[in-house]
Length: 178
Ligand code: 5GP
Ligand code: MG
Ligand code: MG
Image (tube, rainbow, N blue to C red; front, top):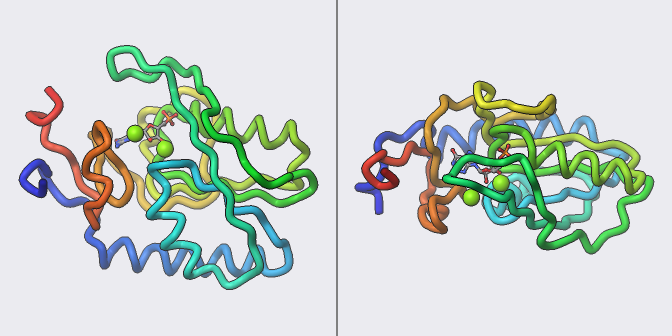
């Protein structure tokens, strides 16, 4: 499995250190807010659970699953909700936990959806950000790392369902998907 990785961008130690910093920032901000932490399945699973352990305030955890209709591996911008929240978020602060912001369509869809439901506030916390690829106007409030326009796997991110369990953030070899 590790042979399919072109290079490691961030080691487990580097990610852990960055998560400590992000969690400290969130802990200061959300001390008396009682937010709902919404994990976007499946990519944000590891990121969410690693962050949760570091967040020192009262919170609820929930998750959604979304799929984007894809044509020839390019996102078409249409997003569909596969699994909805189990919490009522009306008047609740919401923190969306995502693995990576790419075109931005997924997070735009979710932020609009939660705003329609009357969330008190909505912030986005993403492990990774690929700013070069943005198609819609949405930015994360908290970002672990900016990454180049390459195909990233590991730390929850997959290719065809594989590589999510790699404990680091890496670039997949082109030969694997071309
Ligand atoms: P969007 O284009 O809507 O911002 O991103 C949608 C989803 O595409 C992300 O949540 C992520 O699951 C997937 N994605 C985007 N870029 C990458 C990447 O480099 N690697 C992997 N594994 N998934 C990606
Ligand atoms: Mg995702
Ligand atoms: Mg995926």
